Image 1 (tube, one colour):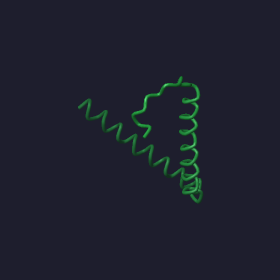
Image 2 (cartoon, helix red, strand yellow; image 1 turned 30 degrees about the vertical axis):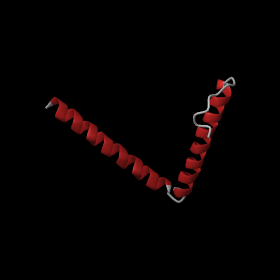
Image 3 (cartoon, one colour; image 1 turned 135 degrees about the horizontal axis):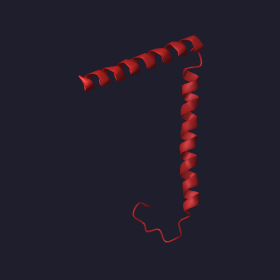
Length: 71
């Protein structure tokens, strides 16, 4: 079991950082491919409607917070 074994060799920090970054990038690419597959049938008009709705929702929430803070 390698969990409690002491590492006696030198640690190459650059190689370790590259391996971690490669792992993160690989996961991001898999997630992006999955999400693109799920949303490939959504039209531009639908995306625009979702974006406008999201902005209105967050804008009204921010206005609510400002009004309650100043009241």
